[in-house]
Length: 73
Image (cartoon, rainbow, N blue to C red):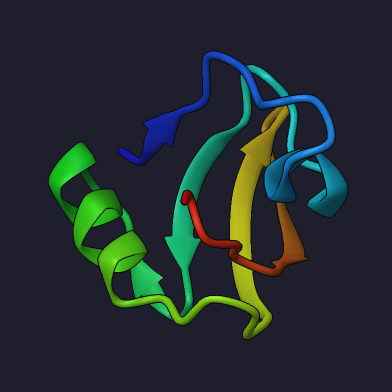
């Protein structure tokens, strides 16, 4: 269940939001994340610059965070 992060880019949105390698993303912008397909679909629906909620599992606990997507250009 969810998508495990192998790492986060230094200085990127994920790092600024507090995400770490090993976190498992289980919810993004109110959408449940069960697989990489759910994660990709949720990412595509995000608007650049609009803060959204993300929930990760870390050390057996659910941790709600906030993240601001940026353009990949």
